[in-house]
Length: 267
Ligand SMILES: C[S@@+](CC[C@H](N)C(=O)[O-])C[C@H]1O[C@@H](n2cnc3c(N)ncnc32)[C@H](O)[C@@H]1O
Image (cartoon, rainbow, N blue to C red; front, side):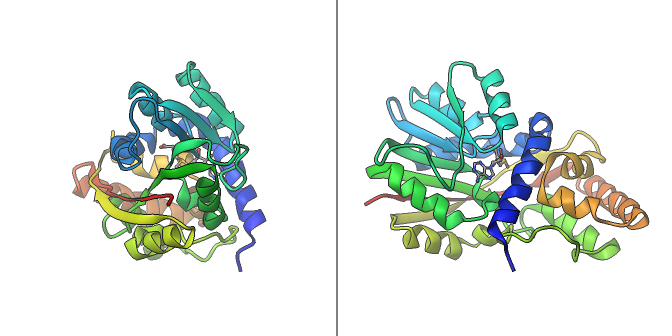
């Protein structure tokens, strides 16, 4: 059974720890979908855009470079500090996707780059996006494609299944790949009141620096997957590490990591 408060706290603590390492890990891939995300939300000069779960601020910064009026929020104070340090001219604030501190109808676009899969209550986050959007405003989110397609996850999950266990005591949360299913993304957007839903795939490639990089990024630069790896027994973990290294070498350090991008309009 999912305890949303326990999962929320687990994610929060995890991101606080990971914040300073994130830029040298997953960011190499998450930045690849920023333009497609902003295009899907019609972000252009003058658009008032909210970047929810902004992490180090890449989306808000790209929106500002388009001439948009960008605000970024993240529930991790450490991430907000990263974002402020990286992009000093942009308004970044600590805030929770599930309880936005903004007035109704105060944005033209609300975007989430790889945030939805980390929320304890994703329905609540979309209801909040709807509330702060003005009529006609757009929302867009990206998530990872399923592990068969987002190969880094496929490699890590199959290595754990082969040499370790996925049955470990970490707080259960909504399924990591829930919104990789276009039907599910469609359903949650319609169910939150949005209309004109569009779901597409964004091709991305993760070019790893070394054969060790994938294990290191998962172990040191993620939250749920790091907890899963850290919960393995020593011998199992070493076998998992070797298997991941072998599969990365087999793929010449280049892994397809497509995103699923869903967008919609507030009627
Ligand atoms: C995978 S990172 C994505 C960061 C960034 N958007 C990017 O494009 O790289 C997920 C981010 O979601 C944030 N996050 C998770 N749950 C949140 C919540 N309930 N409210 C606000 N931020 C949240 C984390 O702190 C983390 O910075």
